[in-house]
Length: 408
Image (cartoon, rainbow, N blue to C red; front, side):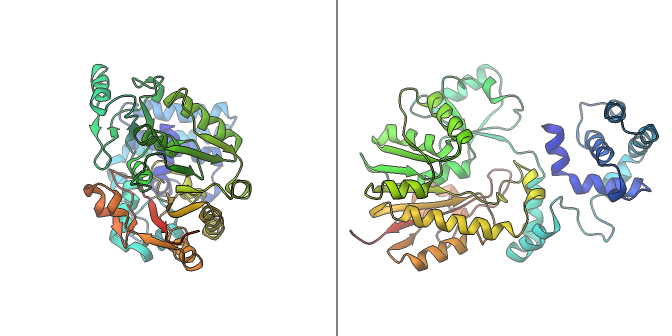
């Protein structure tokens, strides 16, 4: 994972080095040879524990194993050894392209639209943040163990940690690279992996009233559903979750069982449209729609996203997102809350979706997210919306909090 994600985070930079060293244009390179060189260069330029000679030898051996023509073995060997000899010089030159523009390791179409939306300086900051390996962030399962007690368990096994900056339930493991199952308390349900932005999104359904009913309309793997269950323990809430996809549904149930054995939400196996048609008389005090999206706010954690997305997909996501809000709106009780969230930075999936929804649903009004967020997160509020951009401390995210103002 380290090698694959590392290459994806620094793809243009590594290709720039290859362009300088190789007389063969990159588009004419054998695809396997191209990627073998990229992996070798990533090890040489970014990793410290792998000897440079080992990176070269493994790249050549991989070509032999893949039965790449023998003449290309020498080509791979030569390029990588030359990159070592010129490492200091190339490391600087590759920071800019042939036109002296900064190499940002993001597709041109995405950089262009971010520059239009956020300006050049902020775009370059976002890209550089995305190119750093993110820290692992945990949400401590407070009803099961206090955050201080959980941190004591981390200290006992010498796992470095720091407390979250925005969420009172967050613990950050900046140097951890192993399996999460080896972290103390995994089997006991002491924590769930979840970025601070996602943790804060669930709190936007507050203030929570005792005995109230809440729905996670796009439950996925259960990160926010389990957070609602965590809050349910404190307020005696009734939690429902909707998830149509079998694999995610299985993982959802596994996560809930680990975190809250013997305490399960009402899980509806199907999509929100089917649920709203079957249970149109079941009204909720709060509904969370963590909508499927392009994911451009989390390309630091999932660097493949930046290379796989296409601009035309934004319209498709927008239509799906509006459909989810339409069906969710029918299930919101009078004075109830509807929270819409994405991990996208794109206005088509965020502000435009909210504008379209409110225009067609005048019985809902936008409320200020800051009223439900800790003061230290108020810096992410823009026109009542929760809009953090990717940084070292938080993922890119979007959330809007809307309240039903009509009665039935």
